[in-house]
Image (cartoon, rainbow, N blue to C red; front, side, top):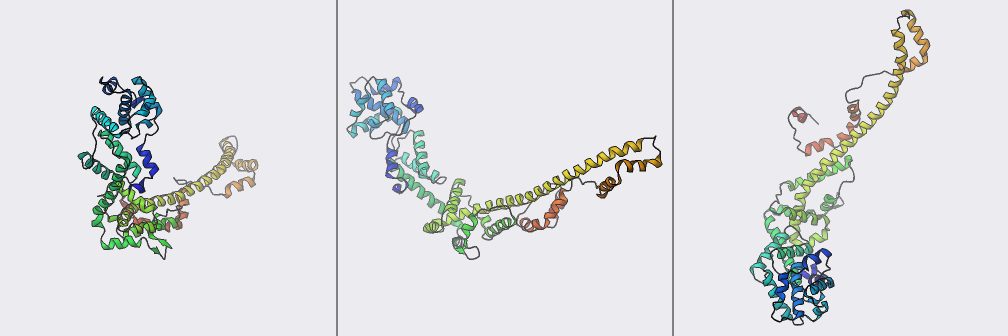
Length: 418
């Protein structure tokens, strides 16, 4: 299983020294006086062994394990440690030709740093297995699980097992998570539910595709057709009781992961999973019914908002035109009112004087259009009414599909017929 998760090249990288940053170089490869005293106890230990042990000490704190080829440590790290000991970095090439020497030294280093090993069957190994299973219920990425295990071991001061051993543990945890998932949702997978989930992978003659493909196909726009299609999906999901499938026994991350697997998998890929496809599809429909309801509300809001925006645009255009006419009327009033207010002009001469000054043609043009007061909304609601037929295509089915609840004072509105 580990061979499928990691290539030989990746495993080799996990066994070896990575590149080191400047921050890591300073943080991990600055031995203290106590560290130097530990590797040079004054009992005649060779400088080569001192250098090798000190590199192992710094590396263990850096990586949580020590690669077999200690001499392949980053040159900058070797040089920094060698300088601290006052020896040549080249001496490290002579270190640890015997594996037992490296192993013995690492054991002493671990004891000095208060780290421990994790042999097979040990309590530390069992705790790591449980940790990986718990994380595998949340994440499925082998690389992520491997790195999480490494961080966990470092925090616990446990030397990381070999890359292949840990990779196999990651594979076991992933399989264990899949098995545990099946156990946790097994009570939900009655024969009828299984049959409904199986049918999702069959091509529907009316749709020209499988129900799964249909469900994962997003709406292209907020048109009446799209709203009705979204309602159809929601109705179908409710018909198979997707809204009643309680998968809360699974961690949130696990549910999201399984639903995502269903979205990106082909029908053939899911079929190849055999029994394991049912928890995947179950998690998908349980999440899909929630997402579909959100999509219906979003599309409905966009469709209504688009018509409201259109009504606002037309109303604004009408207001601009009305303002232009209003300016003309105001100019006319500026001519009429001074004449009417002038007491020196006899009443029987006012009409003739105004008609002469303004001109009959202009008076007829101004009075030809009736000037009506605007409603409070400037006519936007009446303009929106022109979209009634369009909104009627999908509004009733949206209101029927969604149980809207009103706040205080909305009783009459909630009772209003569609």
